[in-house]
Image 1: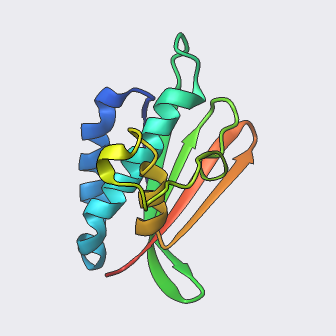
Image 2 (image 1 turned 60 degrees about the vertical axis):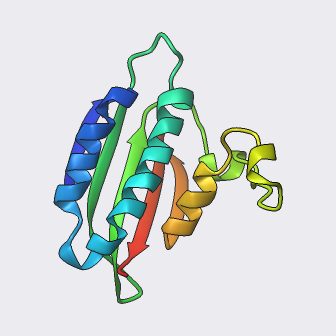
Length: 138
């Protein structure tokens, strides 16, 4: 398993994207943009909600090829040591029937995470927020 631990700050997104580009296996290369978008959305939640503004928190990303019920997935695990925050439970579902110009800014990020990731899991374990994403080849 390969991992990267960085300060929980938006200026590190380019480093994280390079890490993902290097780690995505060839058979999942068609999913790279979706993986990067999903990871970025979840990291932005960590950057903005996990730690208080004056705290210097960390974000960890690790990934590997994983098999779930015999099927191969690209697995991404995001971890932070901030306050408890389940992004999947706390984000309201967007109203996709509202015209784009009438929608409030934001609200589509987690919807897209759920669309790009085949499976997603949140857990709170030993003072960490853990989000696991599984991406099918395609």
